[in-house]
Amino acid sequence: MTLHHRGVPHRSQPDQLVRTTWILGIGGLIPFVVGTALVLSNSGIMAQPDLEFAVSAYAAVILSFLGGIRWGAALNETGRQSPVTVALSVLPSIAAWVMVLIPAPWNFVGFALAFIVQGVWDVTAIRDGRIRTPWFARVRLVLTIVVGACMVALAFATNGVAASIA
Image (cartoon, rainbow, N blue to C red; front, side, top):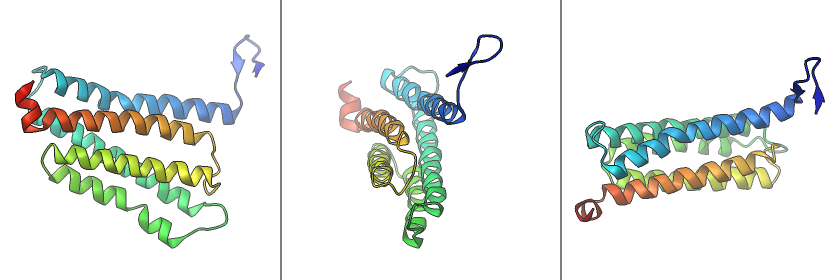
């Protein structure tokens, strides 16, 4: 890292990309974590069904976004630009749409499974060298663990039996 003329560190463009990806990824976790905390605490900040729907809708948007990342990555996969991979990359959007339509807790169970499958698929493609950003595997792993944990917590929180005990 070199210094600018004002003594401010200068990061290379690749370093800036990694840093920006981490910042945006962690920032993207805020609605998951806050939404989960609000549902778990029964905060009364908004009606519980509306809050659950808001988290579910956000999960659908992010899952669709991850499918879009894979679409773009599939078009640039090293040594293999597979039509099958492009076709599979639309499945997260379809799954997200279906999850929004089914009631809790099953929507959150479905989201947990979909985010975990997507995370494994992404990390596997990175580790196999089909996606040439090795640092992104760690980002995807961390984000997948946090989102998966939120979805599992929401599934338990919105389960009629668990909700009546709490």
